[in-house]
Image (cartoon, rainbow, N blue to C red; front, side, top):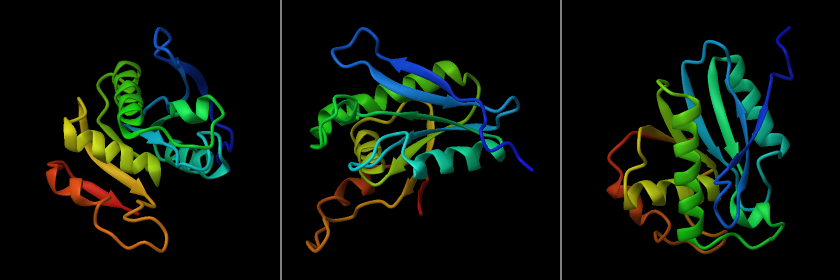
Length: 163
């Protein structure tokens, strides 16, 4: 039976910024890649879904760096403005590059986290990121069909995976 509680290293990203962000790194000894894994708008990085995905990837040799967006770090229910969320994505990717040096990086996440990662990539490529996996990408608000949340996807020049 596989270890259901792999080692998780708590981190602080941006300790010198106005809102330092909590993060959790789970890195197998022989990791093959690292997933910079952002949470959705309704639950943070410790939500059971986030933890279960991180454990499943760990068991398959994939490191994960889960992190909090500033709004979640502050205990707010209202998601950050895109510029703030995208800055958090960039800080998390930089932290993963440092902690998982030499490993291929992918970045994305659950719902809001995946969308903010994609928007950041569309504006300016995330340094070292080779692909974008999305878990439940929100193409439009519930009951309000639109293409506005997907317009930026055509600007992305690296592989994307929608799950």
